[in-house]
Image (cartoon, rainbow, N blue to C red; front, side, top):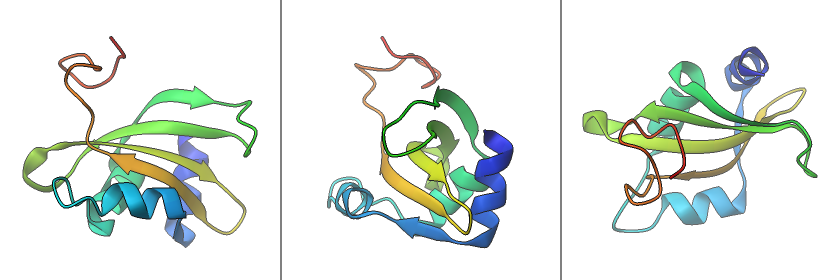
Amino acid sequence: MLERVRIAAGKRLLFLPHAVRQMSHPERMITTAEVERVATMGELIEDYPNDPRGPSCLLFGRGENGRPVHMVCAPKTGYLAVITAYLPDPNRWSADWKRRR
């Protein structure tokens, strides 16, 4: 799955409306560059092969100033669909941001 994500991200990123809404909250403002960094260098932490929207996954990576960023995405033939991107809540995630509490 991670290889498919990288290939799709190399073609184009398509930000779905939910992702745009989540990324644009004033208190967290996630940039498209941060999402691109997660797509190309992030780590796969959850795989969703049976997602109704098509196979997707949750990636973890580091954004500006090393802050943790999670991104749910789905590789398609000509692009990577960015379903959502958010700053993980420390009350819901392990200290390394890779496991749900």
